[in-house]
Every structure is written in structure tokens, then in C-alpha cells.
Length: 225
Length: 313
Image (cartoon, rainbow over all chains, first blue to last red; front, side):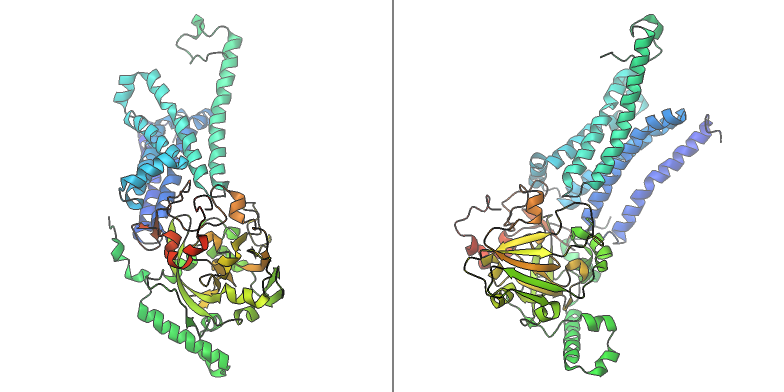
């Protein structure tokens, strides 16, 4: 396979492979549930597992752009929608487990948790913010919104990831090692973007006024500070 | 998808009463056999079981006849942060703790301070079986058949002075084998007011399910205070100290707005992460309502008369 410019068939095969790979943790978790190997408190294990995979898939999705830039493999971008949708699927499973197996749709404690427990509030907010992204993840929505507006909307994934990490951080009782690891990975992923943006801004400033005709249609203009 | 109803706990998850009772008989006979020093027994019994059996046991007061949480769950789902913060970590790591020799200092404002060998301490009073509910602040609960005797028996033996108001528990800490990260301020300490410590429900505990405590459950001895959240029941004690000042406690130091000194099970007092109104009994699918003082209100409510339990949480 030509790594740099794979054929359409190769991309389709890669997508199918990544899809199956993404399905694997769900299969393992389901096997654990039905095989009764999730420990003494399987509902908690499921809650934790679905939450961790939501965060992991979010970070993997956010890693596509830096990875593409570092490796020059532009076709990686074509996996991003699927990865993002997996993050959303895990978030749905996480929410469903909480509403159903944990609280059995008992709305009073559910509302109480959302309103009174800061970690639930931010986690729930992150989920709500994911819904429009999932809903506009199709080609029709991109055409309808226009590339620029679509992109602006989908930048809210940064906020979602931050809320997700905060949700985990506020949830742990005393040992922040695990949420700290997620926070560091997220900081690196967002930091790279910030750094490249800064480089681009400097390049444009050096080249002349961003509004000048030479930039038209060529680069994403970055407003100078 | 198979959704189990609360009443349909898998048969494999429940220790059948006959099995449990027959095992108790077996253990009791084993214990008597050992006490008699009958060499015959030694060859006949499985080594580990013979060594770990405690007995004979009195049936203690205040027991519940609720379904006991299976032995495997009680010994595999633990909070013992020195050995890791995941529930499965203590069962994996706590066996590194050397349990012999083990001594416990009983000191402070007492007339007869004394350092006990663990075997001496175990024989200080007759061992009882007490089936208690255990409620964790994380909103799960268990029913555990503990083995021990009232802490009061030990405290009376050392004669607390009139000025003693509190009891501090200091637990084992060995940075060589335990988690070195400062998750909590090690060694883990806990405390009770003297009248709480003297309450007949407060158990100095050496075993569970008729056997010596597994390391992850706080071997070789711990305290069990069934009307308070689990973290008050300090594990692997090395010192019991009587003081006139309220002792600092590990969780209270780590997050004072979340974990008060009293930490009585109280469905009314909210926690920023877990609703205390309900709990999940390990092995059950649906939550149940949490009872005031974990269901021991009749026995302990008078200890807190006139106190604002929302302030003194």
C-alpha cells in the first residue's frame, strides 16, 4: 500500500479495519457484563468503562489533525468523522448506563445530580454539546451549513474535551493520576494547535497584511493580536 | 439483554445458608480441634483453611439476617488506598504486607498503656460473629459477617483516664510495599469520640466469614463502626491512642468539606459526588434507600442528641 496516496479501495479497507478496532472495547465490555467478570459492582465498572472510552475516543479524534500534520498523511482526515462518532456512541452508552442501570429513570435524583453535583453538570453539558456535532456529521449538513460555519461549530469539540476531562477530574476521590494523564494528552493536542496557529500568524504578518490579495482563498486568515 | 431483577441475584452469587452453616460447623470443629492440639486434625485439614479459621464464635447481638454479601465480593471489592485506588488493587497488592510479627500499641490518656502481641489481643475477649451492614460513602453497601469483640473490652482493659475524650486509630504504613504517591496523608488515621468508641456496636475486628481477615480487608485487625461510612473503619491498626483533643483524620484532612469527623451515614447530608439518599447493595441491580445511621439509629441516635448533624457531618 502506498502510504502517502492510498487508493479509494485501500482507504475503504482501512476504514473498515479501524471500525472493527473501535468496536473491540465494546465487545470486551459486553462480554464482561454477560460473562459476569466485571467485578463485584458491574454497573459501576460499566459506567467507568464507557466514560473512559468516551474520553479516549475524543482524544483520538483530536489527534487526527496533529498526526496528519506531523506525518503528512492527509488521508488520515478521512477517518476523523468515524472516530468522532464513536466518541459520541460511547457518550450515549455512558449516559444510558447512568440513566437506566444506575438510576432506573428515577428523574428526581437524576435532576438533583445534574443540578447539584458539579462533575455531573459538566459531564452532562459535554454530552449536550456533542449532540449537534453528531447531528451535523453528514455531508448534507456540511453543504447546508457551509464549510466555514460547519467548521466553527465543530470547533466546540475542544470545549467538549475540556469538559470531559474536568468531569473525570472532579469525579475522583483523591487520586488524580488518571485524569491528570488525560489532561496532559489533551493539553498537548490543543497546545500543538495553538503553536501552529501562532506560527501561521507570524508567517502572515511577515508576508504582509492578512487582508491583502495575495492571501485570498489560499490560507485561513488568522487575525493578528 | 438480560436485565436481572433485584430478586434474581444469580444463585452463584449467594452463599447458601446450609453451606455457610455447615462451613461454620466445620470451622468451629477445626478451631476446637486445633485448640485441643489434636495432631490428627493437622494432617486431615487443608493447611490454609486450618490456619485461617477463627473459632469457636459466639453469636453477637445486633446482627442482621439480611442476605450476606458473597465472600468473594467482600474480599475483592475494597478501598485500601495504600495498596491502590482501584477496587481490585488491594486484593492484588495487600498480600505483600507482612502480618507477623504484629503488635498494637494502646497508649495516651490511659492508666495502663500496653503493647499487645496480635495473638494476645485476639484472646483478650471472646470472639463474636456480628453480621453488620457496611455503607461506603461512594453509595455502595455490603452485609458482612465480621468476627471480633467490642472495642470497649480493650479500652476498659487499659483504663481510660477521666480526661480522655477521643480515640485515635493509627494504621500500618510501609512505603516499601505501599503506594508512595501522596494520595492521602499516610499513615492513614481515623478517630472516634470516646463514647462512640465504647459503644457496644463498635467492633475490634479480627476476621470475617469465620476466618481471619484477608490482608485487603485490613488484616490482622481493624475497627468496624457500622453506623458510619466505611472509611471510618480503619484497617490494619498499629496504634490506638486516647486523647483529649479531636484527632485529625486522613479523609478530613484531604477534603474537609466532603468528609467530616463524624461521617455518620446520613441520607440527608449531601455529598458533592454521591447522593447519600440511596445506595447499591453489592449483588443487587437496583438501588435501595439509605437508612439513617445505616439502620442503627435505635442503638446510636442518643449519642448525637442536641447536635446539628448537618454541621457535624
